[in-house]
Image (cartoon, rainbow, N blue to C red):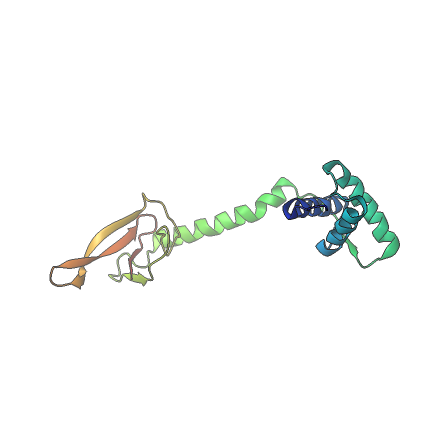
Length: 171
């Protein structure tokens, strides 16, 4: 009796789907699984790597002849030029730069005496205003106005960002 390797079978199915998509069609995985099962029953083995391309082409011919609703012709998108690809990146960069300039010119929490209170984050500490996570820009200091315990005296910590001037406390 033939023992099949499910990992190898799934790998072959994904390769056939990729070949069909490279030709320009989109197909559901169920149909390819059924095709591979039939192939396995017929030849008592899984398709070889060098057979995948011809299987994909013949399977498309079968689909065209049998059922028109099993596959969908996917139009190829024209390649975007470098300037079209860079446009959203530049736009995002300019928005962040303008936000940083406005924060630097009018810091929200720097001189008001207020300290922003945020929940304790998981992972690396980031500035809640500018989103900077550089260890060189985030500074931790003892906040003597925030007493955690009176005896022994334990003070809380406050954090400040040298990039935008924001001060905050976690808790």
